[in-house]
Length: 147
Image (cartoon, rainbow, N blue to C red; front, top):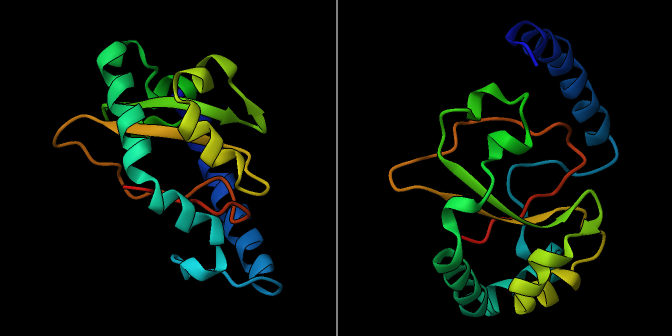
């Protein structure tokens, strides 16, 4: 996708996204952080973080350089092109990626218990890298980050 097309999409998309967010806030509470009590499944992830981390560590020993970069999966996201950010997908757009799930069975079991989950992945940043401030495609997504 050309830089011009990407820029045009952002110019048009930003006001639409803000308007959609304002509309949603009429019906739903929207804020940067939610009380974990509103997401009971998050406590289960936190309780089992060592198991999740162990599977990630095993995965990193197998093929860390073979993992796709975020910019490979989202080519229109120019702001992330220079961020050394790798992704290991378990679920994308509502479908589990069986090959990846078999490599991390406990993590897969834990995320399967999350109601209405559409996407789940390990997000792997190289040392001294950070994700720049950004907004998602719309306000209808709840993101959970387990550091």
